[in-house]
Length: 301
Length: 301
Image: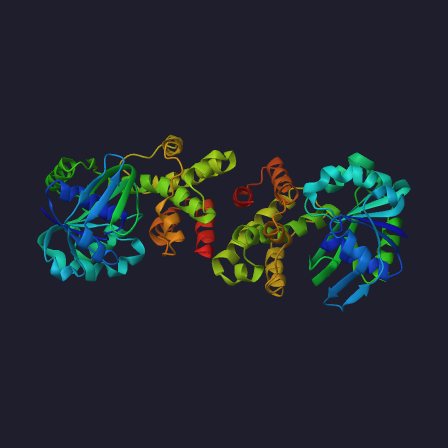
């Protein structure tokens, strides 16, 4: 399968590396790390075992890759206005576009640009970050859940999932990608938001009873907004407690948005906060804490 | 009038200086600035005109002051467990105790220690801060509102107000000191809270439409909690807008709590946040934003 990785940050490099190691024909669209990666290859430090790809196919322009079977989008959502230029040269008749980006609205944007029938939604639960140039670190988890943006046939999802699983990427199929997105938001909104605002790792927030309980309250607001979206089945409020316990096992983890703040990048507030707030508002679900959180975030970012 | 100033921070030094300049017999209980103040006196830089007191009566121990007519309490509320030791030696048969401290609960604490009939509640709208040792800066406002803690006779309040006004301190009398306290909290909770959390002056918060509107929402929560407290007359919600416009005139003002954070002092979260939250809770008034604000504050302080 000819695959283009658009957005070669921690997520794009990690999944791209696994796919290449699994003998897929992977092409990385690169920017800052181009020279290092072409010269020295890519080093992956992973809890599942380190490995190295001495040679990768890296490019500075999509035109040099040309049409592919699959575009894997890992771009930061604040750069979504570049999607058309970056992806157009990669699109042939049968090209599928899988977005693993954060938050809401990415399938919609891609669908407007390239047609809904190409678009596959994906949600990644991955703890990873960049090391030095030419390196990526995989700290935990890694499962991908994928689903059709339009209700299409399930066959191509099965094929895609089988390629991913064959390459060592735990890939599940869902009939309700909207629900999967909201489930990720239940984690992303409180932890990305609070860790970034306070410049603290997840364990510090979980250790203090009052912040732990604030996280739970924020999760409940997100769950209520999610359940107003006509999901196939509702997200139970108990899911909040499950996520707290799951996060207890992550140690001193830094969510990606905190890393973005520390490296003075833009924050993904639109996709992770504003779009969910809009959806909540549309259905008259009160989200005072989520609203306050993004207001504070935007004031420091 | 023999007056003791307990808590000679910006507020205590400023009002003490005005009282001394107005020929009252003022005694300052001091700590860190003792040497400087005794040697060089006190310099006041004020928007109403600078002045200097070359000689002040300063002490390290209340025992050396002895009983006074009036104790003026300007102590930070997190030091309230020192009130008994600091004030006891100052109390004679007719001693009145006026607290100008922030937040809720100070009259109650003093009343338990020294009897309610001595206690006068006071609320100061004062913009001031410390300069170098031996200096105090008065940046704006300055009005004091005083009221009986127990419904007592109004005579001693009239006397006190007349002394203060004679010394150039704008002093008003109220029959409802609880309302005056809550009115100050309408300002103190959002501005002390948000400025301290974000390490920003008031003008930066007011300039951004989303933080401005968050401030208003927080004020409304406080006003609703206030109006559940059996005030003589309710605080109108329009008071929030008035306070925003009033604060627009304050420029790049740093609330006292932000200065406390910068100087790594403890924060007055109990008096300014926890006690009002308790009062709100007691009357089932929802205050999600105030609660979230103090939770975040305590996580950074």
